[in-house]
Amino acid sequence: MPTLDHEKSLRASGFRIVAGIDEAGRGPLAGPVCVAAVILPDDFTHSVLNDSKQLNEAKRERLYEEIMADDRIHWHCVSIEPDEIDRINILRATWEGMRRAALGLIPRPDAALIDGKPVKQFPMHQVALVKGDSLSYSIAAASIIAKVTRDRLMVAMAEQHPEYGFEIHKGYPTPAHLAALKRHGPCAHHRRSFGPVAQLELDLA
Image (cartoon, rainbow, N blue to C red; front, side):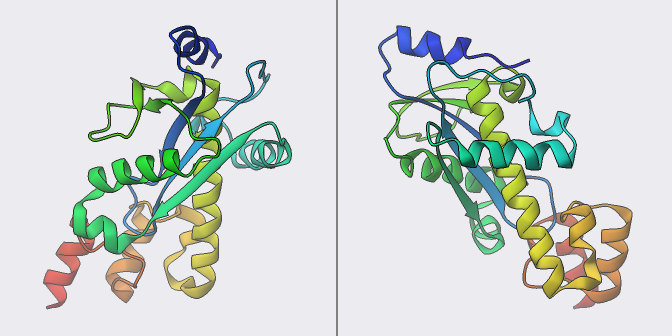
């Protein structure tokens, strides 16, 4: 289960405001990658909050609403759209989302705990934690915000493009999604630089 140990360690080193950062949606063939940054109160604790991937949709939604309702929690979430992902690649797009999410926080953090590996050209002190969403409450909260935000965007997208089943697979390359992609071709929300979409466009050319 996550704790505030990493946040407390950074504060003990002199960093006053510490944010946790995580993303959702690096792997899908469609939709944005969403990145959230969260600052939690010093005494935060929770019996359920964990890596969003370890929780079912109902628990994620409930936690999201809890986080939104707690005015002690500061957060900022950004979406990097498919056209930018295609232009700079998914890794750079994720890094850019992490920079924007951190810089969009009020108050501005002076250190960040980041899920995964270090981010190049990050605008403040960072500590990268592999599987950080299961280690840090701040990162876990960010994972919930990013995941729920993205899932809701994909459900809304499904209303515009019901033929793809975005509300079910959220843009990931499931057999049903790949079959729909082959049948209907890509829409404006698909990532043209991702293999299955790029190959399909070559086949259709």
